[in-house]
Structures are given as C-alpha cells and as structure tokens.
Amino acid sequence: LGKSMKDHLRFAACYWHNMCWDGADVFGQGTFGRPWLQPGEPMQRAMEKADAAFDFFHKLSIPYYCFHDVDVAPEGHSIKEYTENFARMTDVLEAKQEETGLKLLWGTANLFSNPRYAAGGATNPNPEVFSYAATQVMQAMNATKRLGGENYVLWGGREGYETILNTDLRQEREQLGRFMQMVVEHKHKIGFTGTLLIEPKPQEPTKHQYDYDSATVYGFLKQFGIEEEFKMNIEANHATLAGHSFHHEIATAISLGIFGSIDANRGDAQNGWDTDQFPTAVDELSLVMYEILKSGGFQTGGLNFDCKLRRQSSSPADLFHGHIGGMDHMALALKKAAAILQNDFLAEKVAQRYAAWSLPLGQSIMSGKESLASLAKLASTNNFNPQHVSGEQELLENKVNRILFG
Ligand code: ASO
Image 1 (cartoon, rainbow, N blue to C red):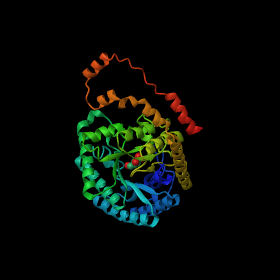
Image 2: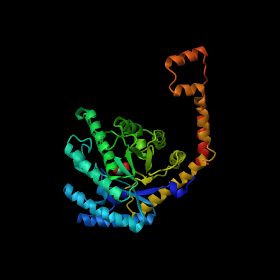
Image 3: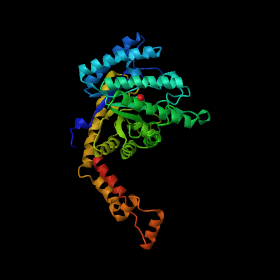
Image 4: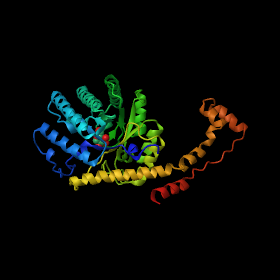
C-alpha cells in the first residue's frame, strides 16, 4: 500500500449528528435527552456540548472531527452576537484540540437550518440573505484556518428550488457561481492552504438541488472557471439518491480529477432519503477504497462518519458501537481493496481493453490529426471490418466477488 493502514484511514467524527441531534424527525420529537440539548443559557450549553464532544472524540481515539459554525456556537439574535459567540467557541475548540491532539478535517457553515434560508443562501432572491450567508462562510473559513483545518466544505443544503414556475434558473446559477468565486477569493486572501470541497446531493431538502452529483458539479465549476479550485466531498447516501452507486460517484470524481474526501455512510437501495446510517456494506466500501488506493490515496481529505443513531437507539454507548463498527468495516474494506490491487488483474484487463488506442490509428485520432472525413476515407480504403472487444464482465465480477466474499 505504500503507507500504513492508519495513513489511509483518516477517520473523522462529526459534531452535528453526535452532539446536536436529539432524535427528532418529521413524525416525532427528540428521543435522546442529552443534557447539553436541554433549555438553558446558550453559551453555557455550548461549553457543555464541547466538553462532551471532545470527551467522546478522544475516547473513540479518532484522529479528526468536523463541524458547522452553528453546531459549536449559538447563533444569537444578530450578526454581532453570532460573530462573538463563534469567536469565543473557536478559542474553546483551539484549546481542546491542543489538549487532546484531535485535528480538524474540515469546517463549514450551516446555510440551511435557519428559516432565513428557506429559499436558499447563495441562490436566495434576497441579496441580504446572500450577504448573511457570505458572513457565515467567511467566519467559518476564518475559524477553519485558525484551527488548522485541512479542508473547507460547501454543501448547498437549500441551494435548489421547489418549482420552476417561480424560479429564474439562470439568475440563481449566476448567484451561486459568484458566491463560489468569492469563496475562492477569500481563501487566497487569508492564505488558507487547505482544500475547498463541494458536496453534491440531489432530491433533498429541496425538490431539485443544483449540486445534483459529481458530473453536474463539475459542469457548474467549469461554467464559472473555478474547476481548478475545488475538489469534491462525496457521500455514499447522496450518491444512491442520485441513482448512482457510491463506487460510481467516487470513480467519476477521480476520473475528472476532482475527488477530495468522503462522507462515509450507508447508501443501501432501500433508502428513500438521506438516512445517514453507519457504513456496513463491505462490498461497496471495498470498491470505493480500491478506486482511492489506485489513485494514490487521500491527499487532504478523509473519511468523515456523517452518520447518526436510529432514533430508537438513544444510548450514548451505541454512538461508540456505530463508529467502531464503521471503522472496522472500512478497515476490512481497505484490506479487500489492497487484495484486489495486489496483482491488479482489473487494471491489467482495462489496459488490454484499450491497448489499441496507443497504436498509430488511436494516437492519430487523439492528437487531433484526424477528421470525420479523413477517418471515413481511411476506413473505406483499408476496408475496416472491426471485431467487438470483449468486456469480460462476468469473469471480472466473479473474480472480485471471490476476493470480497471468498
Ligand atoms: C450535514 C449533512 C452532510 C454535510 C454537512 C456539511 O448531513 O451531508 O456534509 O452537513 O454541511
């Protein structure tokens, strides 16, 4: 593998599902009753939450964590209060990181929970909402830089629309594009050396989300000339909601040169929405790890458990079981991926399949020397009668499955 297992498995736990969610869903109230989620003085509760969070992360021996601005600090009633609270909690996080040795995989801003974002943050018809969103992202980027964060994530939670009848698609895309350009400008202004990550997701929470999947996001980045500035944070469950497999989304992002990091969870076929279950599908995870290993492993990204307990499973001990199980499954997947890579019959078969493209005809086509007419002439002069190239799909699937399940 060229690296130790630990270097490949850059695990992170998230603040939001573990510390901020009480088990509430659209059909029922919270079931978890964590002390720091009870009513009380907001900053006091934020401090208790930070104590519990770092105690939990430390006991898990997980190397990284991730957070949104409003997971760690109370929003307050004004921008001033928001900024002060967040600055105070950034100090707290910094001290706790030093104490525990925990590192920040990425920070981000929540532009989707507050009612002001009901019609989007960057894509909102009101430029004042856009400006509020800009404030939050600037503060969260600054905090991420200060805390030594290795990446900054942008998930466009509410950047989408419910009906085209009241939506100016061109205007909203332009707004989102300008917003992302500002993020890039700010990154360079403050000298943040981490990676900017866009996280695609379709279907939810708005009926149509602009950042539908990897390929859509790539097209969007190209439109605004910022494709060199972003990589992607790919989530298993988001991939399946887009009608893809997790494997497909990772392989697509790698092939486009924009793979960055992972939100690990379980995207099983029965999911009707983003259920954020702990990852346990070893076969899918192995193929994902195979792609990542083959492409050289994680650079600044890692494996963030964007996972939550089921609401009937309120015991804090289950949080440990969920994460430990997730880490075990990922480690097993890494071993299986390494086994596929050793004597890499897949790479060999793929290379054989496309070998003709390195011969004179293939090279001449790809170097731009040919046209439709020149190829038509060549094909008829030489009386081309090409044979079908076998994909050997059954053979390869059986061989891979023997490693995964054998
Ligand atoms: C919560 C979402 C997750 C995303 C995070 C960042 O569940 O997919 O990574 O917010 O905004």
